[in-house]
Length: 217
Image 1 (cartoon, rainbow, N blue to C red):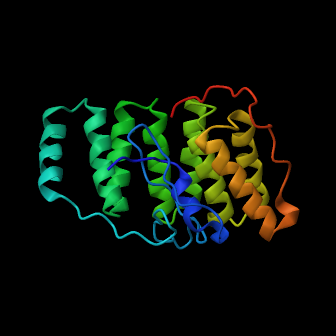
Image 2 (cartoon, helix red, strand yellow):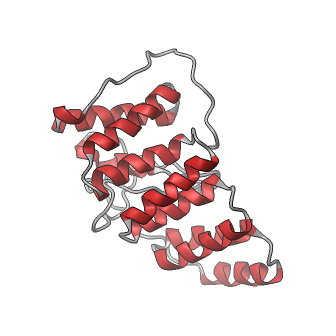
């Protein structure tokens, strides 16, 4: 399955208004879904129509094969990230965290894996660690809009900070208004405003505006 690491799964049930969508890293990872949205306790991951998707069954044969490959290649960050993806999709977040961290130990500049690790922390009910990890992703790639979307989800639903969530989603709109992430961020801001008018801000950038290039997608 393609993984998209940011929060777009969050859109699935976001105040009942957003369309389910998954954003993420290069290898595409599922992101927090709002409980209406992300977290505390973690909501079940939402798929396209806002319905909860069952976890993928863990393919033990594939895990065993990749584990052998990792043991034979102690400097291979990619295979460790792939193991993290398998465990994440099976909702085995502790194992996913372990393998994502092992990948980052070898390739600490990989913003996508860093964000995947943050999403795994979020699903493991560790909102503060998720936010700290997302900040590391932004240190690597300051305009990584998928990471920024995830930060907003965790702020909104892990920390009950709708103003902070709207603020970072606005940054996504400002950076890349016509990208998929920018459009999703705009919808999320509008949904927040709809429920809590005091937490919104301007939804910026007119359609057609030139968009700065994302850091990593």
